[in-house]
Image (tube, rainbow, N blue to C red; front, side, top):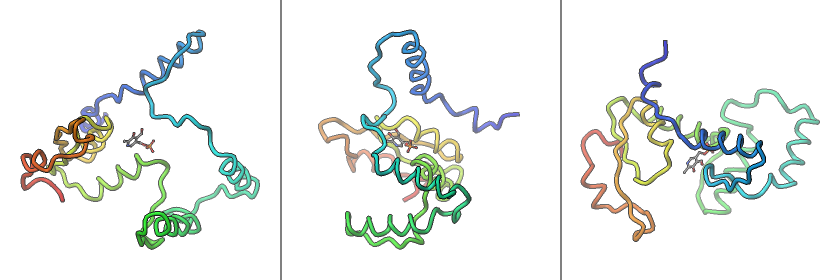
Length: 165
Ligand SMILES: Cc1ncc(COP(=O)(O)O)c(C=O)c1O
């Protein structure tokens, strides 16, 4: 029996459009993709080489549960160099993409009944991540004339005791 919270998750739609587009491409139809935010470049050669090298060295086993310590150390150094932000390697958690990180963060921060403010328009999956952890998404409009940044006045209208800081 599927859990009730899963039934409340609406389709992302993007993947359905992508699958349909791939099917049309297989039929020889020329498609301009405007669905997924796919980069228009391939994996850089140095990254592909490093991945190949790791495979060749047999580095295919479990790492530290928070991510390879060497990688977390490099991420920490990069944040200091690029942004002047001091983050110790112990504060870095490596995930495969941002979705697991967002889900983990929401899982840690949200109790059921909490309300989470989101921009409207915004990334379609955020709402589902919030519902999945049992919290409630609350949309706040953002406008083109503001560069789609939040208006404090619009956020104030939605602040209740249920919102997390
Ligand atoms: C705004 C935004 N957040 C999160 C994600 C999810 O990213 P990932 O594929 O790293 O999980 C995407 C992917 O397109 C995105 O556009």
